[in-house]
Image 1 (cartoon, rainbow, N blue to C red):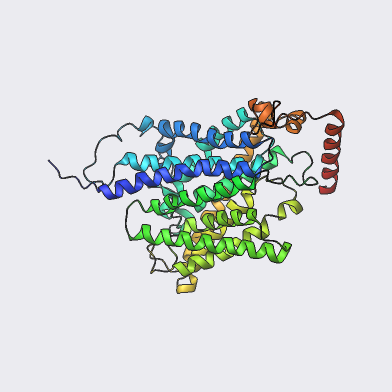
Image 2 (cartoon, helix red, strand yellow):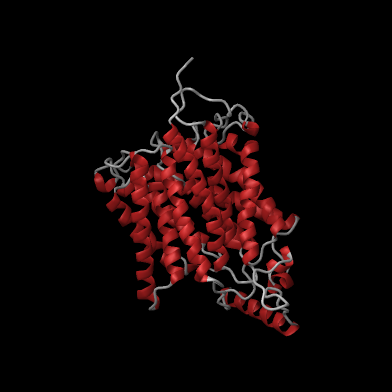
Length: 447
């Protein structure tokens, strides 16, 4: 009988990391939920959890196979039938250091949170049923194939195929597959649904910053599984990645707060939470390729870049409700591209960027991968969202938006005050007319 190479320590670390990434989903729900208005918080939480429920099923049926099955499309996707229903993956492989099912569970969490990230762009105005249909289609057509590109054996980015000229782009834990992918999709779906009534004239501030800070803390906690768990071993790489994740996140939060202080005169808790997430996003692709000092530099650049980009949505005229574009797309681009400058062969990835004597090849590969994922996600998402909007409707009607999607979509309210409840506030005819007038005025200003 062949002796098994199973490493119980590595197996335990992967399973714990999967659980840590799972914690990120309720963390994201609280982070997003606190940033919405009180009449929409449950709907946002439901869109995040709904993504988990649906993607968890699709991942078992065919998602894992598309992402990590044998390549059947010149680097574009894996065989969806190879591991359909995860067939053939429950038996021990004596040559593997951890069970295949551990990796399946770990990557399932990545798929779920990537879909959930997109929901933040359309707070206050989306039909829950249409969101669920969108989530299933988007995971199938966009996320699963892109995950194969980046991490699947035979994937064109993983193998350095085509325009990469044999130099694979580095994406350790999801700068392209998760954050650029979700950020580009968020922009597309926000454009299809259009602006919220009254935006940008009405401030639409977060209703509960305590939830936002709690959610950011849970995201940071879970992100150690997201990044360090991607080492797939309890080893030096995981340890380096762990420390780099700390450094970049702290630096980004400080940088965001400094920008706020200099620009607005105040350092806010919302800014701190946003800076934390910006740093986490940016270090995700680069955490195995930069030094701890490089992680600090990357974090500062990401914090400044995201803090400066987020307000541009008001000038550019797109209503990305919870700044998915400004944080995830921009942060993902910063982290992915800076690998070409800040990578050092002293780090586990063993690659030198321009600042450490490397050539331009790695930077070019990083840029090609980033642009390809961004363009694919944006174009395909735009088509999916537009077709769904035309066929079954994606946006709630005006009355539902004014009343609040918690009540109209879920027949619930997040907060109850006295005997009548808090979220079902009656909105009179005059108030409805005022909101519609403000929305029309805002359209005129943006035009």
